Length: 76
Image (tube, rainbow, N blue to C red; front, side, top):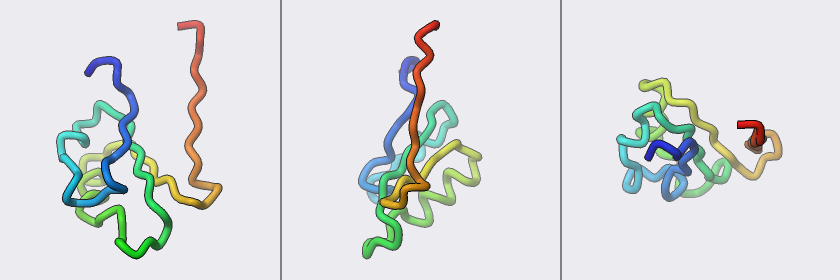
């Protein structure tokens, strides 16, 4: 997958749907999960894996400050 740069972590970061291969460091990971949701996503095990492997990731919630935007440089 040489052209993939960003991956959304499956099912809001559930430990049952997360594959540790995502934290290989080749991708920017996005977790979409509500802040203080009743299922407690993302799971602590998922966050710990990303933090221990120093993977660049963002947790996007309904809070405006968590928004992630990308700008594409068309000069490439």
